[in-house]
Image 1: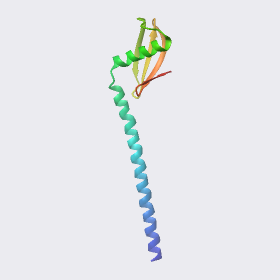
Image 2: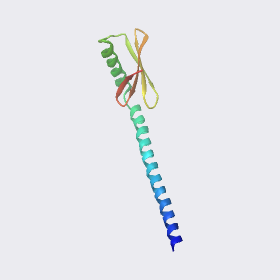
Image 3: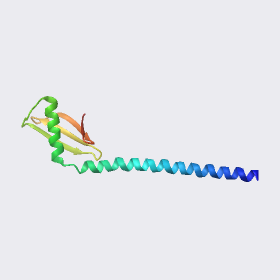
Image 4: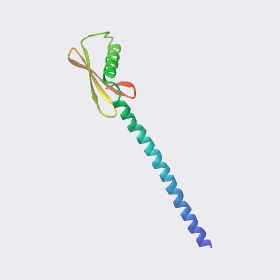
Length: 105
């Protein structure tokens, strides 16, 4: 009887470890799916609005109000955009755009 009790305890420990492992795996999968779905949301944003916001960000940063010589070019990296700001044809600023915010590179 004592030997059988030890066997049941071992089975209980294995079942508990499997349950904990499955919960951790489920959490990781949920986290991963949330991160990748944000990449999908990012790609659905309007190109014109991102470029317009990037030019506005640039103008506010350098104090260049309404210059016609500023151009923004966007490259999609899947999880974020990189925006290249050209002033008078020369690269003047690089930005990263992710989750609704610009970050200077």
